[in-house]
Structure formats: structure tokens, C-alpha cells
Image (cartoon, rainbow, N blue to C red; front, top):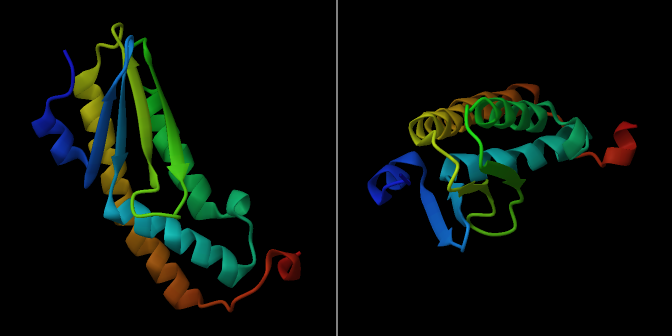
Length: 142
């Protein structure tokens, strides 16, 4: 079993698939995810924190790791990209091989992850709006 194209289109705003000899690779991204990571960088500039110490970056990474790490299957792995240098730079690279057998759980996890970005984007926007902050360099904050 593998993802159907209909299921992949419902998961996120952008999906790319690559079939290799022993593995299928998928790349999932979404406009809310992209905006989230752009605003995370804005948060860093305004509040003088590094990306590693940004609580919104940490929360998202922990959430993605928890949901994808909880799948009960072998034969898969993922990487979370948080770059913002092009339209779909932020995303999840997912690799699955023949042993992977938790596609339904994976679809649920991915849907929940992208709902997280939509919800937390609003929280991040509100935090920046309410707390304001001014543009600082990371060195000024230290």
C-alpha cells in the first residue's frame, strides 16, 4: 500500500513524490507552515533570540517529532525543514520503504501536524502583535 494522490493532495498545500529503488520520498509543505517559519524569524529579530532558543521553533519541532515518532511501524524516517528561502522551503521530507505499513496513522499524523501550524500561526501572530518587541540583534539580547 502507498499514499494515493487524492490523500496526498488533502494533507497539505504542496506535495512532491520521488520514487527510488527501495524507497519512496515525499515532501509536504503548506502556506501556513511557510508563514509560521517566516514569522519565527521575525520573532527572533524582534525579541533578540536565536532560532534554537525560539520557543515557537522548539514547540513545532517537538510536535512534529512526537507525532511522526509515535507511528508503530518500521521502514520510515523524516526530516523537518524550516528554511524560508523559497516558496516551499519549509516542509517535511518523509521516506518510506517496503516495510512501512502505517499509512492511515501517517495520514492522520500529517493532517494533525498541518492543523497545528494553522492554529499556532495565529498564536505566534498574536504574540508578536501584543508583545511587539523591537528589532534587535541576537548579540544585543545577550
